[in-house]
Amino acid sequence: MNARIQATLWCDVRLQARNGFYYASAVMAVITIIVLRLLPVQDLSWLLPVMIVNNLIVNGFFFMSGLVLLEKAEGTIEAQIVTPLRGSEYLAAKVGTLALLSLVENLAIGVAVAGFAFRPDLLAAGIVLGTALYALAGFVVVARYDALNTFLLPAVGYMLLLGLPLLTWFGIGQGTFVETALLLHPLQPVLALLGAAVEPATPATIAYGLVAGTAWVALFAWWAARSFRRFVVDKVTAADLQRQVIAPPRLRLDVNGPLVRRLGALRSLGPIDAHSIGRDAMLRWMIFIPFVMALAVRWVLPLLVDAAQGWLGIDLAAYYPPLMGYMVLLIVPYFWGAIIGFLLLDQRDEQTLTALQVTPLPLRGYLVYRLTVPALAATLTTL
Image 1 (spheres, rainbow, N blue to C red):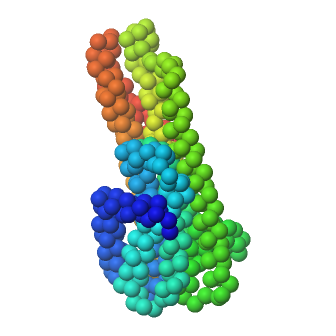
Image 2: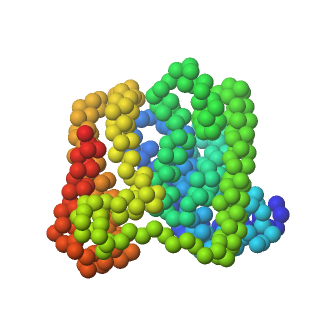
Image 3: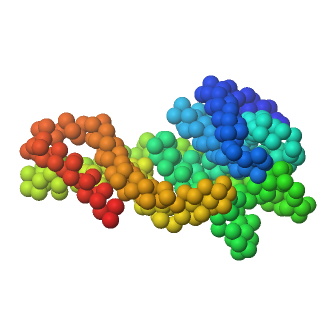
């Protein structure tokens, strides 16, 4: 370990401690142990790998993303470009501290839940490889974003893709073809190692977990280093060049022009809202969330209901109609109401609401528009 990585490690440890990452990990560990202890199941070893992966998602993906966003907000990640620290060393320090944190937390969970009835070497290997995988994936995703609100919703989609093998762990989508295809998934080697730590496994399974897991981590390390150059180094260089160029005037909608007087509130405020949604990544994602949830309730929920009856002996079929009603009556209007709320906040910050006071647009017309649009959008989405 060279001096640059060692110094960066200590800086990352102090940054994580100052922002409460270690307290959050301790709370998560306690909650995980309590939840597992309260389950009416005698042998919890089969569930331990899934709970560990859940913690790795937080400790790896979201902690890495949080650290990068903090450094972007403080300007420290751009300042590191002019230091001797290399991008690979920066990533190695981040992954190393997060892997150590995950190792301590999840080994403690394993001992508290399963005692010492597991292989600590395989469990540690799965934890380290899993943390490295999720941390590097988190950097790849967050490198292109500068704010939490634009990053959070896309991150959910990436998490769903990275967590696909967990479905087969609970008996959903099993089959020879599916199991063979999942061997090419990045998470599958980690699950193989974690499973081999609590249940007997063949040497071939262990070798697959170690070799394939290391290969996937190496691939994501290359991808993360490439993202560092593209979205951090090159972005700062491009920003320096743009300071010398006069930016072209941005397109602005004239809320006091003839469009307001002739076409009314619906046709004048509609383009403003469309422009605001188009430039905000979070609002764009929120439009599609009700459709994704509807597809999940229609196609995924029945599989979960059947699987729950098989694992726990609990019949959840009676709850399917209430969940559908909850989806239709609450979720869709909630998201459209949230979108309108964010639009109002943006328009308040941009002084658009203040500008409306000196236009021919009456307050009653504005309120009618604001109440009608989400109602119509929620109705059309529900249908």
